[in-house]
Image (tube, rainbow, N blue to C red; front, side):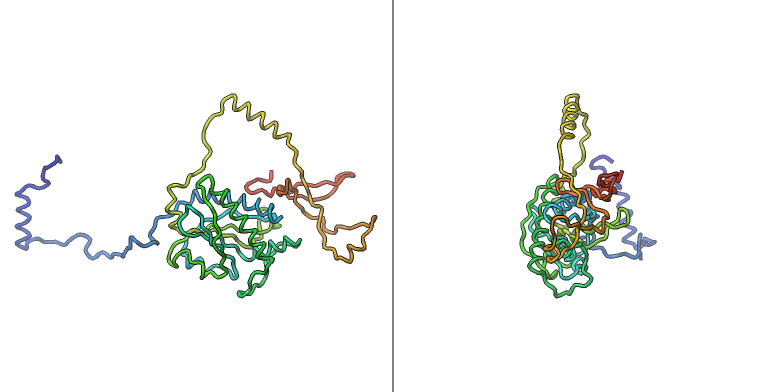
Length: 338
């Protein structure tokens, strides 16, 4: 239809007016009596599904740096599961938290508002056990009114610094952020980063020990990184997805890469395997003298560490007249045991 051309002629419009005026229009309208549901376009529950691709990439890097940080700062070779991303109402999330708990309010500029680093108390207890040479484990019963001891507060601070360092490294390829600790709250009701009905994004990383079931993990607790939905939604367009560029190396680059790989193969590392650990009283220690034999009763699985980082799970034994270790499995995330 050309510009300015009428859809109906003047005669057709006049005929319609005459029929309406006379009341001779018969028949009903369309969609009359159809059941309708109310829909509030301003409701936050009606927001489109959140694309978690970039957050999943950030979580993958955070998972790796968190595990390395715990091993370096706390000598805790914990198993850490890859982070999961979930969107829920803030009130529902608070209701799911254990007590006591450590909620560390954090400014992650340039993100809007405050985020929370939630550290499960069982993670703190297991870090303390490991710190003093015990076996990391969950406490069977914890009073809701229990507060953290001075030692647990020190370990908690170390864990928080490890988390912040891992966050900086994990976010760097997508968005440069700064982590500023605001305050710690043991009571979830005092951590008001959002209204009860507002949505939050939970990034959960489960921490535990290696299970006897191959590839499994005995979960001790979790570390959650919680952001208000709006804070991530506002910078969603600025987040950069990292992907390997498709480019072909020229001859000089291939030759340089080959020489670099050959040079790296000659770098020496110190590999350490702890033969075993055993409790010993002070009285027993005072009676030891040259020539005494200390028997290690449990020569089970141990870890082979390179520069302090656990790489393989090993069994200690012997081959011929020499002591030896057998590699059982890799402890690095995302590797196959081949």
